[in-house]
Length: 278
Image 1 (cartoon, rainbow, N blue to C red):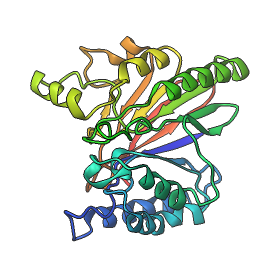
Image 2 (image 1 turned 135 degrees about the vertical axis):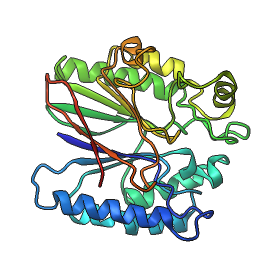
Image 3 (image 1 turned 90 degrees about the vertical axis):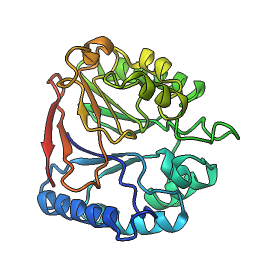
């Protein structure tokens, strides 16, 4: 299986009336279709959140139009919600916005709950999480941080156990969410305090305890930093610390010349990660 990882499209951002993100998204989608249109082994398109910028219904309607060529040309798609999909500026979460996310990206009749396992083959299972699921209280909805919640964490642990029991140890498990579940190790103290206060995954430590040494790949976005933790920050060795071979933070895909990542996955084989300029 091939998985193309994109993130943080931020379509129809009001601060960019020249439609920069929309133009870049159109170029990316066009390049994907052109590259794999006739290929029987099309990659799964995995987008880890912030598809639109303010969670508005009109933004999702227009985003669906931009993304439509993927569906029309037979690409499987997995969309994961981010804080901007839930409300204006990503800091005022509203449950109603998630209804727009589901309706226009998956269809009005598609039922989705998190944790979700949208794809599970003999070789690989993708587990999608909603890092905004427990961010809908009056105070929780403020700022740009995320929280999975105890129920989603408990169900995630059960799903991983079930997959391992039924598929075996050689099966590849990939977990994807929007928020980064740990602080970036190169940040200074002031930056880490800001992240801790209102930007990263509040129950990230509990999440990492569940997935450490139990999954094969962890993908996320949110911070707009494009990092392969198996290659960068060797002094911290986060892939060794968490015993997860592949940990990828994706930047904002609609920035000009931003690379996408193509993951090639085979059972009992190391995951191959390629940087692509689409």
